[in-house]
Length: 550
Ligand code: N01
View 1 (cartoon, rainbow, N blue to C red):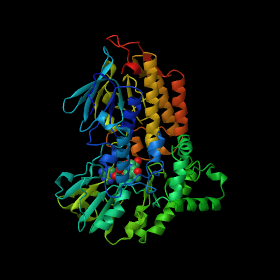
View 2 (cartoon, helix red, strand yellow; view 1 turned 90 degrees about the vertical axis):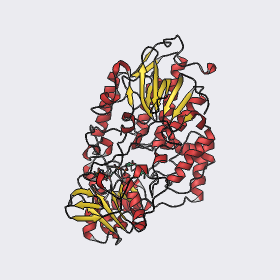
View 3 (cartoon, rainbow, N blue to C red; view 1 turned 120 degrees about the vertical axis):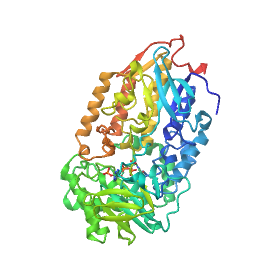
View 4 (cartoon, rainbow, N blue to C red; view 1 turned 90 degrees about the horizontal axis):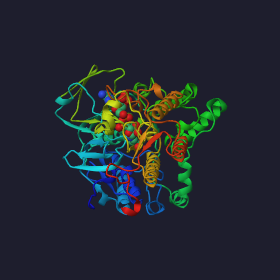
């Protein structure tokens, strides 16, 4: 690591996609930057997560950095949906090529950050007591970082092996010949269940909410497809940036009522055969119009019934009680078909109650299931978990844990009133998890970089979201979500999966394209909605040193 100058211009918390790009971007502008990362290496969620079957369900040609022609040109993705190992290798490749490791401190978990008004500096303290001072801090802590461990009676009494998907051992355990249980059927469960069924003697799946799962139809990329992307990357990336979700889905342009029933069915079938989430974009009103939503949901129900041979099991797998696509769509391979195997049992917690976990198995109201291994695929304290794990103290005694006790509030996801010179990457109130997150990460880092440049150019000391602008933005975030069916599901998007977590729809669902335009306009208007103060810090130095001085 290069020697750290104190105070830093920018301290970044986290070294996933956002931290790696942030170090590169801010450093290339002449800023004095350091990233601190709890893990031993770069990767963020792709470093911590490594359970069997883990892939990204965004096309690999799109789920990658877009800012550098060279990085893009010299890397070849092998499959449509890249495995965790390939994505982790990619982030390491990017980190090596950008030479960012020298400005990242690994094995460094942040305990607290505190803003000092007199000096306008943040002090960032690590769990080991080391601390740094920085003029700006960028929270690149990720949306899906902190595992959610369920509070199930007796879980502490279990004498077998217990794993959480998010903290999967680097040396993957050998499950062959064992009786294994998986709790959770979200994206993680859906990906691991078919593989675990092949390894385990018996697999018991504990399902609280059945998943809508679309077939991935994963496979190697045809060479011509890779070459096409290589040749046309910038134009394709621009199209993605200007789309609703930051990814080149096949977005239907017509509402349900404008399409004849026989054409709807044919199109749904075509999209189903194509694989991936395109099927949920068949009409442009799937998440806003109940009738359109039901057409797609019924299509899925028929698919489940035809994939699963035992009709009773098929019924258990059919989701109910929430509109399709209001919980994150799952993308899987042979997910429903796995329940045709003799060694797989399904516990449906809608009809069978989980009483407790005992030393050697799971007891429900219907019986006892002996197991040697329990795998928790129970998800994350999403979007706010990693931020609130740090004791963040802003101006005037503001503490983020208190300020967000009724739910997260931000201005465009990146600024928070009461926390000057602190930026959040893909924070609540931005498209983040409702988009191709790498596209959103790049946007946020570049917007923050422009803002830092503005502060430097104008010799400004602090920038902070105005409370009224923040309120208006949050009203807008609520209003846009309120126009959809998204609040009808108890999803992690709303914090509903964590007991006691305030429920508020967290991502901005107005579209990546709209969001980018808004952010561009805010910057063009001199960072409208932010309060910008001062010309120098308490010691008479410009808030950020001019590039020439660093
Ligand atoms: O977590 P989840 P995940 N008893 O919260 C159940 C991304 N991701 O790790 O729905 C019994 O979705 C819970 O039930 P319910 C992606 O954005 C991407 O699977 O709360 N069950 C649910 O079934 C994704 O959405 C990829 O009723 C309990 C499951 O556990 C996000 O990460 C791969 C329970 C948790 O599902 C999170 O996915 C993986 C309890 N006490 C993840 N508590 C790809 O790119 C929870 N559950 C492919």
